[in-house]
Length: 463
Image (cartoon, rainbow, N blue to C red; front, side, top):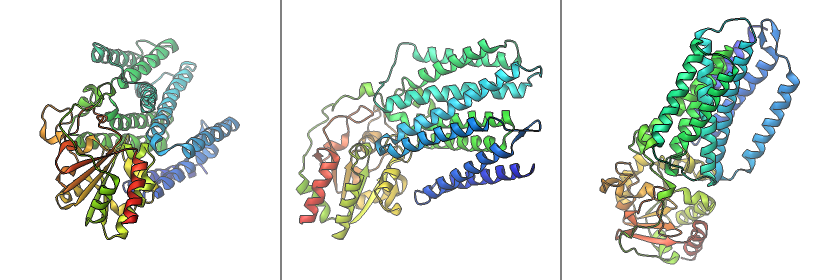
């Protein structure tokens, strides 16, 4: 039986790799998630009943099982009740719990080590301090991100903020290094390190604007993975180590890809204050715009050969994905080709629009990524922009003074007609005016996305 647990860990590790591979496509993502979850279940059960430390089996099983039941029930209820608009908040909250768990592991292991006579190796101590710092930053930063996404907390900035953040980070690293080499020791110092890391996590996320939240969530997710890998090193647990490395590397790669999609460096995201909610006022009055009725918009789309829908966060807020799919169905019934243009950072988390539309049973092959669909906009008859703003703003290509200049966008303005659905002329999350609103081939359809889409469905039906 001693050789069974490593085999179970190997099996679980393979399922993690396979699960991440399948998550690369919306069509196979659900299966990938189930496979990886099954692997984690195997690893947990194997650890509970087969793990031995110094020849002794795992004890306190009743407490472990009780915690699993309570935590599993709480997670299941939250996941079942969450609205699609609140999915980024839930991801951020769950990620924070993972970081907090990794930090607690380091605290408990250090406490146990100080109560024994065995000296700590540099490698063991380094893993403890790294897991504590990274896990605590991930925990507090994720909670702040959660509160900001819930609109319970606005961006907070003050003079010399970056100087304070950098200084606090240096102090945290210095104290961690002293604990590693043994120059200082004891639980008071460890608790001080924990507090410093928690404060840094809070200050780290405070100034970052809403438009950059997808990048921040991805970065914090990678932090949690690295912290979990440190825990795997402490326990000499291969499945925990491999799982943490996979999450950390995947989160890092995703962060880099998203920064590339916005043509910005990670440093610029963290200190550039782009997407500040404080700056999100109204229109700057860039010119005159044309308004269109639902009836006129329906005629444009019903008699088009090709319609491309650009979904954004407004679609999620209005919970209008099902009505949007119904419009797609009605248009296709009239012989219109309908596709969806997906921008990498549309919504509030990576893949937000893909998940939203998949929930409405939109065919996966109709979700076309930005790099592929941009070439098709010049031959598109009508583009329907639903609740998106900054990802279709031509200022990213034409205005060097714009904060989004250089960010790759969906080239919606190249279509023959563009219909923009918004509640008002208010600026998007980046807090800047959208040049597209004033283009001669663009028209505004004002109103709630769900109500406007329902009107379009009825109008198309009557034609």
